[in-house]
Length: 377
Image 1 (cartoon, rainbow, N blue to C red):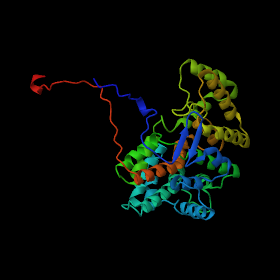
Image 2: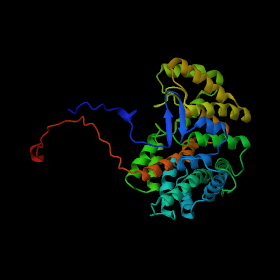
Image 3: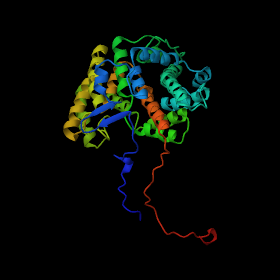
Image 4: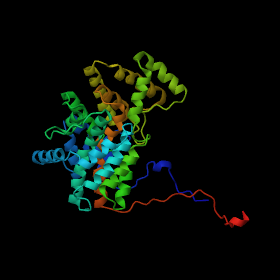
């Protein structure tokens, strides 16, 4: 038998590498990007574009740098015609994450820097991915509905452009601000499963698009992405505020898994949930329908008291997005629209300090077996 090596299932708390990009303090409930607390970035009025620049370069941009960077991202939103035509040929009922995974892989074939693995070329590839992934998501959603994709308007922010390309009209000031906050909150989260898979792929010196395709495929899994979609399905199943308490009591009694609670790292409240709780309340009030937020509060309080579990980033993002009229099947692709900033930051960091990622497995199988020829079996 194999010796006791201190193996931890799921590599829980195992340090796999060093990074300057993101720090999670699970005990204190803090999330830090390149030295800046997430609360400071959100409360200070940072834009998503500003945070992308920070994750890639390690410093906040000057006004001039931010203007040039924002304009660069905006100029890259349009899709190559072959990619747009491919989206139109896909099954209309295809899973949105499967579409995104396929489209990003296809997109790599048309990148003008394909084959150039210099840091400058990879920064340009990263900018195209951050700009084009929202366009893929919104374009296919419109195609699914029998509508034509909406061409981007360069002067819009990343947050405003998503709504415009999805609906064909500019968002309200609240929608733009709320979505900008959501993009920042989801931008990076250290070595989560999708980021780790991106770094593993990049560690082989495969290209940026292959690494991001790996990440999207990993995010597609329900144990990583999709929890907020499941939260909204739960709220819709409950239906009304006065049914929330009895529903959650019965669900816990039957040992049903409640999505949106607990976290592998945080032992206190997820700092991202702090902001999304407030956004959920405001979004409900502006939509004239606060029951989703009120139901969420009832469930949150009950689970906290009975199970000692805190709400995570997914719990209140569900009702926030729903109150802004975003279809539930887009929740995980929206996650990718944000996390592409962190994925690309980690891929760039992997390239700068690369070593092939090749862990070992603790063998627990049989030993000492002898081969018996087929004629004797």
